[in-house]
Length: 150
Image (cartoon, rainbow, N blue to C red; front, side):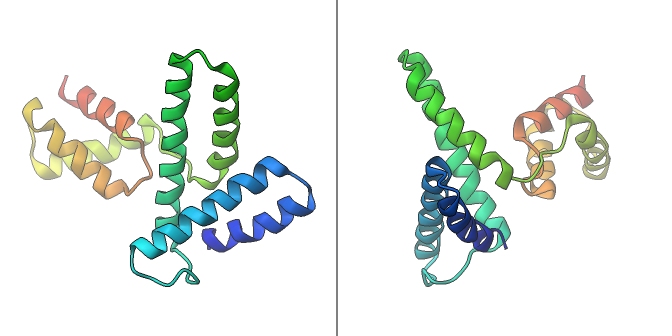
């Protein structure tokens, strides 16, 4: 399980004296514990891989937002720190599908739902994202769907 692997990674990173990696992994474990408490579960339990991935995605998104804020404020030193943290978090996320991989699924879903006009594209994007369950980026799915209706 991902949650257990990350907890074990703290020990490895500590032995390797990788301070940045230890900090990121400890932060993730704290986020996992917060998620467990929010779901009214014991902090000693483990999250499922899907739940852990959602927590990691939120952590990456938070850092991406910080990067854009720091760039707007002209703080390149903080941008570098946030980007380094993102680089440490990315390996824990599953690989996202490319637009070429999404296209056949989108075409099948469009035919299945019998959509012919662009006004239903939002519903189609939602249905595709629900089917792919986090395996594809919403921006890529929207681009594919827009291509289907043009």
